Length: 286
Image (cartoon, rainbow, N blue to C red; front, side, top):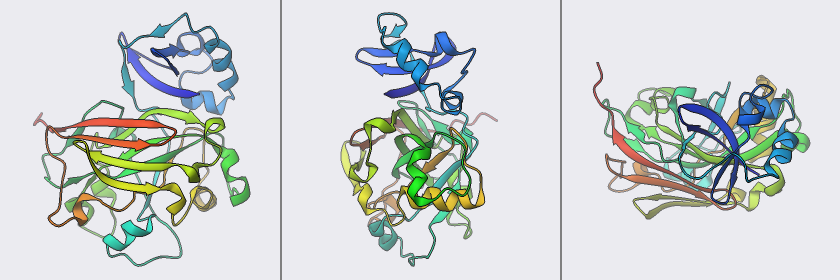
């Protein structure tokens, strides 16, 4: 299934992406499962499947807005320099463990929503990634069992404010400006992607291919990341682990290429779909 969170008629709900729109499962299930995070935590996918068999009712045909598939994750953990070409272009040494950092939920925007270039910088860079959605609680998860804890996969654009990212050795400032992280458009459940290593990723800026990579090229793959992260924190349903970006980022180009007002950036992952976001300058709302 393709599961999305959306807003329609000022109401936030979730459902199944079908031909012609979205089947509104939240309309029927909200009392038991108020959001997709609770669906995963409460084993509610079968309930959604049962409802979706009758797709004539509650299908929205375009009069809705995509939101981040998990609008309120407890944890958003991202892997840095996790593709060998990206490590080389950034001049980083290969480490024994993967570089990790976190994002805050208010940095997320959904499919077709604008990524906001902050007033504080003109060095906003694209970073197309595959994001993993955790489906159940786990701690000290073994590599061999890691994929059993995955609910599904989606696209992520870890857009980075490069000058703030480089202020110190800790990159968190450059990763957490509001509304800079594209996320979506939907979650594809694991039954449709039994082997994520076979997926390919492409990032396009104004239609031009900027990044291409295969998930098989990850230095630390998805089981590695889940095993390591779950050593030091409890993973919960709805948590997000984004796996890193391929080579071709804007800051490493000569001359550098950064996103500007009016640009459109796309993250296209085979088997999942296309996350598309326009870029807008931040307005001064003091």
